Image (cartoon, rainbow, N blue to C red; front, side, top):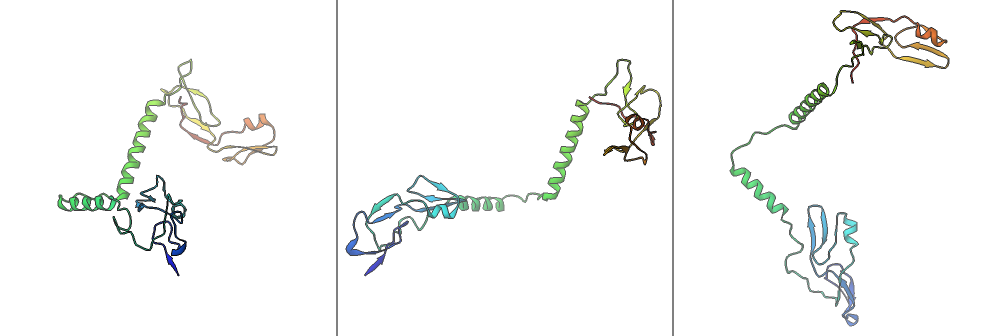
Length: 199
């Protein structure tokens, strides 16, 4: 008559007549389930996946037994839940604390980051000055030097240059050219303020 072994890591059916000191491969310790960790108290191996836990090789050899080992409980007790309960009890005994919504926190952090980036940009960027003491405009179609003290207007292309097959044109204009020199002579289509070059 076969009996089922009660040892952890074995749990196999065995015949008492064939039971010997080498018959049962098992874990003499207790299973560990602490947070996401899984393992045995008798083995120096920790895994996170259940299938890997079930594949951990037994670390002891002995006789099969049908006696349940109840020493120390069914599994290793993690202190995580106990510590969490202590935190809850301490919080309940303390004065109520203001609760911050996650959306408010994210918005405040985004505003702080944006302000910091603006401050860094102001410190790092400097306006480029030509040898003649003028500024250099970076607007497309202008690129002229100008005196910042003078209220001069800028004539430029607000769009982007396009080079499709042999055609050359600006996205803001309907004029198409094939020759490069003619493309460079396309009149600007917008008027506004100069944009100084920064370094």
